[in-house]
View 1 (spheres, rainbow, N blue to C red):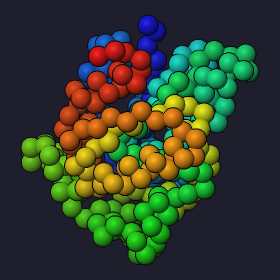
View 2 (spheres, rainbow, N blue to C red):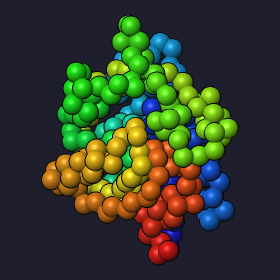
View 3 (tube, helix red, strand yellow):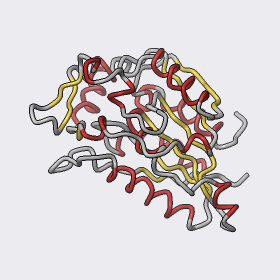
Length: 252
């Protein structure tokens, strides 16, 4: 079986280094791994919409599909928002209809925001008056930080390792959480979703609600579950790799 390239998209505050354990396990198995760094993290001045993140993801995918490669998207947390807006015309079926080879064959989400077209993260959590208590928004509304990252996202790995991951986090552009999705790639590309049952940042009930919402909107979703917190790539890298391999078509 020909293996797809895997394009990794991280969440808010993070960068591509977050996936280091996962990629280190996948590359010896013959997977080409491409990890993007989203402009919404640590940009100065902060970006003012989803546009830059969407363009960054799309450029990475286009580079792979123009080489004729099939692509598996692997997306964590906030990364689902720009990803589902970045893939118009890039699915395997759409490219085949245009007489082209390659394309995005599957979307794999891990405790990720996946919302219908025209919805923002802020709307997805209930609107501006229902923002999670741990969100810390700057006085000028340009960036967002978090109160207690270690307890919210890295509570299930050794303390010193959690401190290392938290030390890498950077401010995130708040406008990307209020801007709305442009399209819904899940309508044209099948989905695998790994639900993190012990997630404190995006609780299990929220993940399941999003899955139900996109299924009602036309998505085909295969759901797997793991007893892990939000940053499962740090705590259970082997299990995430197995999930990715199944999403890529392997039987394991």
